[in-house]
Length: 115
Image: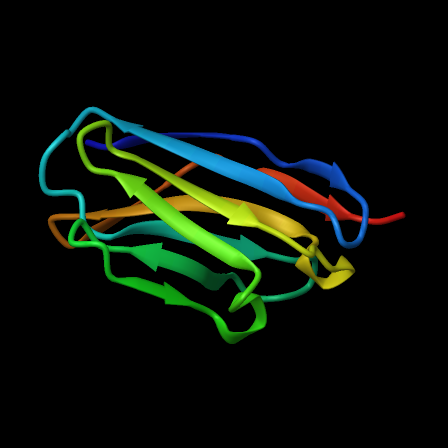
């Protein structure tokens, strides 16, 4: 089993920045990839960014150039730095990890971008 614990999030003004972090425990080897999804009210959950253990990254078009995902393989942590935040980034952000063909999810953390 993989347990994911998220931190970060909160209320941010448009144009601001925040950093989300996620730590995996339980299984320390073979989690690949790790990343972040988000779900806004009334919308489907979407993949925001993911990173493999080898460092390959993916970003959804709407955050390209504004987000940076990073991973510490030794600590099994993944972070998402988001800059120049927009109101449309408002959502619950979920950390996820793939392990042995099973997706594991964090509890979610709310990000609200509003003035």
